[in-house]
Image (cartoon, rainbow, N blue to C red; front, top):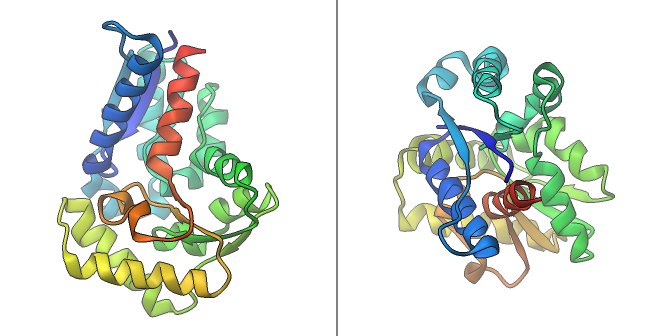
Length: 226
């Protein structure tokens, strides 16, 4: 098996899901008492917030280099937003990086979907790093039109889901926002932040949803056992 290094803690809540899904996936493929050999470098999310994502590169790089020194074969960033630095981190470490955007795009195109709705942090929705990755697979990306809607999504991710707080009000509002994207032509919805699946899931929608945590974890499992 190959050994992966996970940069987690962004947030710790979704990192737990990664650890669970990866180990369950490896065991499903190999059976017995076979589980993933992995290392988790769990960052203090407060440090990221204090510096802001735009200035977080050095924090992520130090985590990746620490994992490299520990002998991992590949790097995993356990957050969609962290992938704004994916190409630089892969180049700097010299290790393969299992990219959440690439794996998500593959899953979407496999279902022959062209128009896809994207929910995520403001950075993921508004900056180009994630949307361009999806567009390179021929996808048309639709995000919430109103700034106040994107601000609300960000608030819930940071102040509630990132702390493990789940409310019925936030769930209903997220469903309504996703349905607005569907009304704009989205044939499916990307849960483009690894905390979003804590709040909503496939049962809430009539169109396919793409849980990036699960998609990413499955790709990681396939890498480990390859």
